[in-house]
Image 1 (cartoon, rainbow, N blue to C red):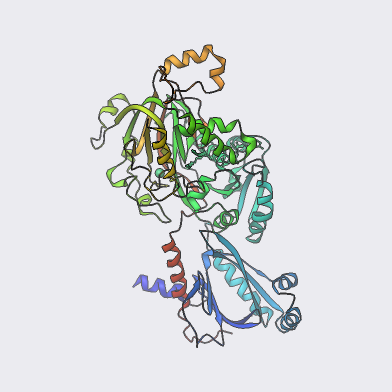
Image 2: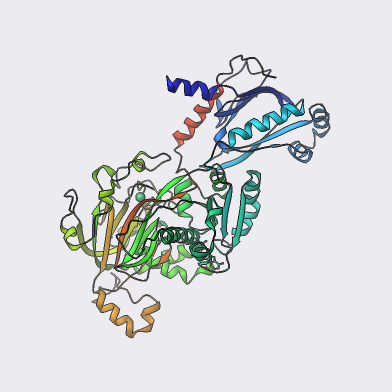
Length: 575
Ligand SMILES: CCCCCCCCCCCCC/C=C/[C@@H](O)[C@H](CO)NC(=O)CCCCCCCCCCCCCCC
Ligand SMILES: Nc1ncnc2c1ncn2[C@@H]1O[C@H](COP(=O)(O)OP(=O)(O)OP(=O)(O)O)[C@@H](O)[C@H]1O
Ligand SMILES: [Ca+2]
């Protein structure tokens, strides 16, 4: 009964009028969910299928929660929307209907991209025009999850160095339209954004923090915000067992980097306008964060890839080629592939609960993901990482496992890591907010086999279906490189080794010293230690995103709109 009332309430018309849209008379209806309009004269004869997301043959609709803004249309705006050819006609028309409102709303285009569309409705009287604007604005003000004030950091040197232009030309005009105020800081050095967030920024003023740049810039904002939150709450990040306090501010990412993996995996595309629109409508996507420690020294947080061996070496090499821009990764990728190094060490891990799915179940994390809504219980998230625990987890349900071997790559993917280079990512079924990371172990194998494995990241074949690859969904893990102490001592006496990465063993050459180290690639940054302990912190942060919408979900969205527009029942016009 209540549900029925809800539906009736939602569908009850708030306002309904006959207005003009591009000189055609349209019936416009507003209820609590949708703004819909259709041609008056032709609608009864031809009302067929849907031609795009929010448009049937003769009716259009926008979900209220996806309306960006409504404003009184100024004369300049009206001229902008008319073509030159019809300028005279348009002038006559606007003289008859001088009052107009423009509604800006989200329109879905191809491949998860969103655009902002305008519909300008002409009214016969000023009163009617103002009433429409007021009622729509009243409804929009009920969306309390929308940000009003943002702190924006722009990295002018990320990716192809387009961050500033992208923000000014594509994003700022949309924020202005949505009446969002933004304090903008163009960074002057690496870690500027992180340090500002950690100590200086008055965060009470803001509803969210936005970074314009790549994954490295996101990482700065992540570290700034998480550290600030822990400091404010008196949590010591160096204690690897400390329970971290979730951040209250959401983070928005305007992609302008080289990989943009976090944006791609949370929105489905790396498009600045789409990201800006997700921020404006106030989307919220919780996300796991891995904390990385070396004994009881905090090193870094990671949300995407922690990679030792191959991806660590690619990153180390690519840092020397920053001037090449995004192409540096391909060049270093080929070079590292040809080097074909492997590394020896021991990996220990605490598997995820059985009901958290597994990396090969093909259940991809999508908008409103059911797996991520099932949070692991708190007792499981706080198991200690002591030696005894390693043998048997105290609650008896799970035990630590240990694997020793020679690895070409050890990757922990806390999310799919989908990006334009690999549209399905390193672990296609990894989840954004399930409290686990997928640990992928690629053992020593031939160059050809490793190439086959890499190639599978770019096609539909299963990259885990190789005898030399194993994958585990885990809650915690740690890594100990072989002969750690020996190398540390050597490092002290050889300055070259302190900075660069020392001769690494290649399977192609005869090599007795198989304990050479790689380094960890932590979301695109090199870690200072090879021996690390990692713990996944379930849903520590939230992004202005909603996860990737399934094609099917987009179609459902069309159907919802279609249903909501359907009752054009002949209710009498209120005006
Ligand atoms: C034959 C083609 C195989 C293509 C295989 C492509 C696999 C790509 C998987 C990409 C995973 C990205 C994970 C994201 C990590 C980010 O947190 C981080 C920060 O932005 N990005 C990188 O570290 C940047 C990492 C960039 C890694 C690029 C690796 C390119 C490998 C190319 C190997 C070529 C072999 C050719 C042999 C002739
Ligand atoms: N003003 C600045 N000058 C120099 N470096 C900066 C500045 N602002 C930020 N940085 C640093 O630049 C690094 C790279 O930035 P960013 O992530 O935006 O681009 P990218 O590396 O090209 O992309 P991706 O991380 O997606 O591969 C970051 O680690 C960040 O700390
Ligand atoms: Ca995860």
